[in-house]
View 1 (cartoon, rainbow, N blue to C red):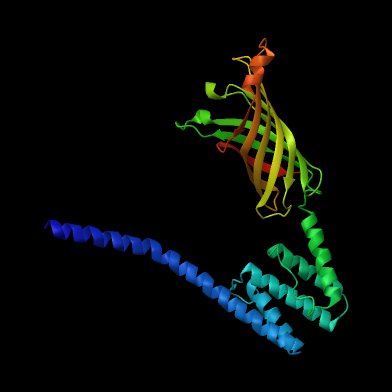
View 2 (cartoon, rainbow, N blue to C red; view 1 turned 90 degrees about the vertical axis):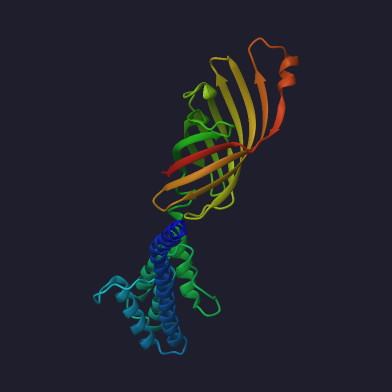
Length: 304
């Protein structure tokens, strides 16, 4: 009897697992199938273009766009990357026919392609007319400039610091405010004020000022950086003043809507702890360089 119960439990577990896993697997297969079908359609239109059958290629491209927009009834899903390729192919076909207003139509199609797939490239320069490459680069630069650090010079946000301790509790967090001025796409000046509130563990006000170097300034892409800061800390209860030089690794991700997430991890810090009235000898003994990997700053940001 006990064996039957075990078999029943195993059967129920397997059945529930199938109910949960199978729909997810089916959806993934449908996505894969839709991508494969869309890619085949695009390749068919591209082959016609390369064969010089431009009218047939344009007819196919127009039908794909109508399907993706639901103009012929049921809307057909086209993955963003493939849809961007289709818009670029249509722009190339417009260039072939060069009807009145073709340049404006090409610019509009390139804009649609880049908005869908921000990392879209036009293709092999040896196969694309120079004018199309010039228009595409111009449109892409104008679009990306909307999100660059030279356009969005100001960043404001909320920050919380997390320090690892053996006992994890609310006092391990310290809230604060953040402001950045972007000097260029690669350099910025950052300021942070962390509030001396919460548990006694955090009874210190922190004022942080420094510079940050970025590897890139792209939107919707994880960007890495390296920051060097001067941190001035005041503990009112203990009457302690600390001045620190801090080296941090930085990572951030911004969306096109202007919102972003970021994190700093402090990898090296040089501390000078000073109490009013202490002698220079004591102060000298308290100077230390620390290698630390437990201090995290987490940011929720917005660009202006």
